[in-house]
Image (cartoon, rainbow, N blue to C red; front, side, top):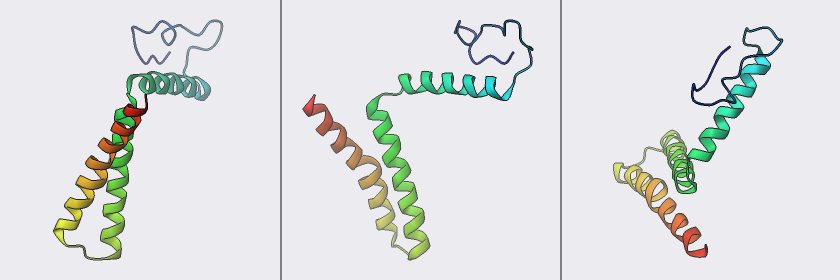
Length: 97
């Protein structure tokens, strides 16, 4: 059986009465459990930051494919969308809690 983590008793349980080979459904369940663990380990602040970094990268590629931007504009997009905006959003959410 394919195991994700040795310390996790839920994931490490053997298939009882079933074939020991990993099936597609079994893999899907293990990926779902792994996603649940990852989701609980990542904080809201990191999720917001990762989302805006991804948005900044998409904006950079979009901007580069449409025009020939000056170098300062790329830096402004990375710093503005990837750093400043997530900080401001996290501060706003934290102030409301």
